[in-house]
Amino acid sequence: MTKEEKAKALLEKYAAGEATAAERQHVETWYASQEYREFPIGADKKAAIGAAIFQELQREMQQTQAARLVRLKQWYKVAKAAAVLLLVAAAAVLLWPEGGKQTAGPALAAVRTSASQKKNIVLADGSKINLGPSSCLTYPVKFSGRKRVVELNEGDAFFDIAHDASRPFTVKTVHDLETRVLGTSFRIQARAASPVVKITVATGKVAVGNTKQVFGTLVKGQQITYDKKQERALIDYTPAPVYVNLVFEKESLQQICSKLEYAYGIKINLKDQALGRLKCTATFNTRQAPEEIMDLLCSLHRMKFNQSDDHKTFNVYKK
Image (tube, rainbow, N blue to C red; front, top):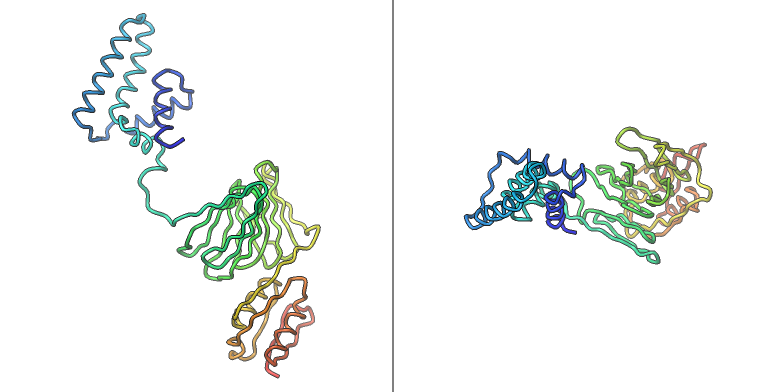
């Protein structure tokens, strides 16, 4: 049902005395806010309104005195409302303000999947989303400003986010729940029928919270279970590891190292800036240990590396 149809139906229910208390309050509150506003109405429209009011008054005069007093008072409100709501489109704008004139925002796209369908989505920034069955995702056609925000309205999806330190990426789900990242991969399960929302991190690090608080920061192999009713969150380790491919197409070694740092929570130091400009095309999987990937990268470009005792810092240099 369109906003115009909703407005018309509501006014008809109000005039017939069939509106609920909440609906009556909605109309009367709207009218109170519009009483001193001027709306251009043509002479023919005014004549039609006058005729409609006159016919209604004639019918009301045939009712009992008590009923007439009650209904005339109600009809008087509706007749006044009709003067500014004669055009149903105007009624929709006034009764449903979100449909009115607003500052134009970014163009949005919405993708839905059926119960037997999956879809792969590539966003404008290069981020990739695998949308599961019976799911719905809303996202900007083009990101603008300092933030990248999408909404998983229903279902589950796996996100592989393109790293951009200057523009954090946020996924909004039900109950004001937000997952914020810079560049990583994770899965969100947010079914309306389920009492909980689950977020599982495959690579990198994400922060999960709502408008009131941050529940925690998750790293690779952790998941958070959020109870929608109790508004409580539990962070633990995933029952089974989640592995993803790390695909690089003619990317610089500096870019690759940056993505590996987020994927594994490590630090990679390139001892020579010239090394960062070297190009590489390769596909790795997070099943592989960081040491294995670093060894492969170094063999491609005649480099060596050493690592700290805790395996968290890697230093790369020329042979």
